[in-house]
Length: 217
Image (tube, rainbow, N blue to C red; front, side, top):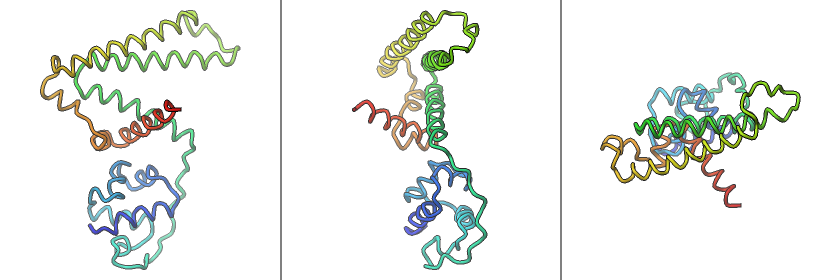
């Protein structure tokens, strides 16, 4: 594939005014893979070139930089439903949580997976009770543990999960508990995050960046 394709692929998407996530869904690939195509990191097959040409209503010659003329325009595809900022943010958080659970399972330590799950469940439970209390008419009978005790115990559960994970991680880093195969599964780079976990990995990187920017303030 030539150097023009990544540039034109990106240009067409931006001209359409859609996100990389939306375009990837319409083209039948992951966002991570489309990102690699747009950056020229990976080459696509001819079937993908044809799909892109049909989707954007241009010729394959134009996509490949062989002609300056976009060619015959096909009828515009149906409007892609826009994703609200809230939906996009929520989707990123759900993707990051799903990826975290998947990553801990991939390492193959039942204890690690258990601690991650325990922390997330306690965090969801704790925040749900706070949101539930916004309306004083909501029935407290939904819960059997009094609010002050529930919040304290949930916070303790989260702290215990973090502490136990930290201790376990030190053991795992010391290679006392990991097999050679598990160490390989635990190896991560930013590129591996997106190649192994696709969109979930990309959303995790995005969440980490946003959270660190917030913590710097």
